[in-house]
Amino acid sequence: MQHGKAAALIRCRWQVGVALAAVLAAACATLPAQKPAVTAFGSFTYSLAGSGSPAVVFESGLGDGREAWRPVFNALSKTTAVFAYDRGGYGGSKALSDDRSGEQVVAELRGLLRAAGVAPPYVLVGHSLGGLYVELFAREHADEVAGVVLVDSRPADFSGRCKAAKAMVCKPPGWLMLFVGGGSMAEYKAAPRTMRQVLQAPAFPPVPLTVVTGTDKPFEGPTFNRLWLETQAELSRLSPDGRHVVCDHCGHYVHEDDPKLVVDAIRDVVNRSRSTMQ
Image (cartoon, helix red, strand yellow):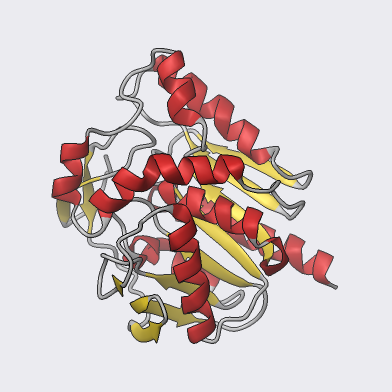
């Protein structure tokens, strides 16, 4: 739950295995006006600001569009080019394919980046389920990736390990997706296939990587939280240049609970990747 916010609304979130109602505020920050693009995969809306390379590319979690990155987008646009978009089914985006698995999402994102004139290499930033899409992108298109930031991202093998540990609510009930709206139900149904795609993909590239983890999750239970922190640390070891940043006062939406922490983590990866690009 967010505190000290003036205007609030209820929405369901992908809470690393449990969708919970959370109180959100109308953020002061606004994204640049959305832009439309038509690609071979459909029509999509996106926001683009700043300049420089590598470009930061945001991938939102389940139930969220590009607006989820309002707390950090503008600050990062002072460092480099910054890109956020709505996946098919969110905002003004409409994908031609009903396939919502990770491979399809990655293909659509790459097509949109080309149409928007955002050239690789990219620093990919993914939150929650979006972290799976980002990880798959990095594994399958390593030559286009300069760095990765995973923000409380769901590990591909977490569901199975969660069930084996007999933890609470290892995944959100499907009926909650009806209240989230957008393309969430289709992505929810495709999530097991997305996880398999990540597990079967090539090795993660040796690029700068930072995993940012929020540990303030009072509803999931101690077994879930212990396993979450353990698997988050494992994600940070995917790359020899990996780091793990833990925020004890942050919940699942770390970029809302502590925007500066996430901005600093992304800038750090941008700077580390620039040093390797020289």
